[in-house]
Image (tube, rainbow, N blue to C red; front, side):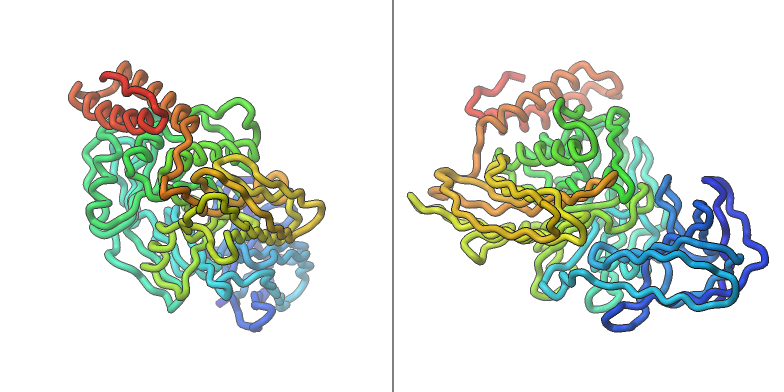
Amino acid sequence: MRVPASLILGMGSLLPLVGAVPVDFRILDETTKEPIPARTYLSRDGSPVLPEGRYTYKRQQEIHFLAPGEFTLELEPGTYQLQVERGLEYRPHQASLDIREPTTVIIPMRRWIDLAAEGWWSGDTHLHVDPKDMELILRAEDLHFAPTITHHVWDTLLKAPFGEAIAGEVHIDETHAYTANAQEIERIMGGPGSIILFGPGLPLPFSGYQHYPPAIHYTREVHARGGYVEEDKPFWLDTFVNAALGEIDFVEINCNHFFRYGTDTDLARLSGWPQEMGYMGGKGMALWFMNLYYRMLGCGFPLKLTAGSAYGIRPSPAGFNRVYVKMDKFSVKSFWAGLKAGRSFTTNGPVLDLKVNGEHGPGSILSLDPGQKVRVSCKVRSRIELEEVELLVNGRVAHRVSGEGRSEITFELDLDLGESSWIALRAFERAHPAVLFGHTNPIYVLKDGRNVAISEDARRLLERVDRLIDHTEKLEGFKQESHREETLKAYRQAREVYSRIAGERARAP
């Protein structure tokens, strides 16, 4: 079918092109020679061109359309710039097209890595898209699984822009599936923060407001139903409360503040903890997110990393920030089980492989015998040049390797831990203005079966919870004092947890 294209002048309205000629496009996997859908950027004289009748996306600088493997556009004669991308595992294809007459454009897409063949299956756990578009989105972005958020609480209003939720799993084929009943409760304009809920029986009814009820009202209900809870960022006001009370399963570091073309570092408008001194710019924000996560790991909380792009709302493609879960065979059940167990890594660029003693990967829990050293093997691969790779032990860099022009780095070393520890691997690519990085979930090495418990991490988070309690005691906006007291009760319970880990006496309420 021939589809007329339109030209976006600046960021204004669409104008149909005139005097157009048909151009046949074929996007082919270079190995299989089969047509494959992909994300497509087409422009003329610096202005994006979008085909009418196709799935198009316009959020700030992110302007693209999702194309099937074979399609035809009616284009006005002239010179066009074309870029085609397909998730993380394919190399982008760029071309300049001089269109003068009807023609055929062949676009070969080359994989630089095939992670499914290695047992790693991709997902994005933060999407806001219509379920009817999920098949095209997953295929065009080379994503295997995603839960789309069909019900979204903003302040006091529960929105359902796509109609009713769909119960159960929707299978596209043996290796692609989605669910369409996730729910986000987002109270970030003075409220406690944002949580995303997954599982059966959603959405939950919402009758609260910006400050009430506390998030545990919803997280406990979801967990009772066998579901999961995600904090889409680690800096929300109540993140450390929810973590201490065991109410978070997953947290994002590769989150919707990281885009293809840059980073959103404007956090002042949101009701989260202010960015700390020393963590400036896009990479600094990523490192700050990591540091907050490390503090929670240091308290012994078994939080697992996931990743999300908030496609549908934010200026980022679906799966730009993604999680890879290790599975023997793809299934939605195995995806959630692997994610909960931490058999995964998150990324918007580099691919990370971490093993302890030759066989134990992320999510593993090992025992440490007296005097025993552990052998750590690290491998990072990238489509572009790596900037640095760092091995972390209990939040501190134990070993750093500079990229020095390489796109693959491997190393091994022995660690003498001496205490219960978590070990993880992170890597940054050399990219600008985008911040491209990846992070594994931790491997735990426990001495005498004792959990990780770093008193300094607990003291730092205890200070934040104390500040949150003081803030909430004075906060205006609670409709009833009983609402304030119910919220403070949860916060004080979290304080007791941090007090025990830090070895301090609990403060009287």
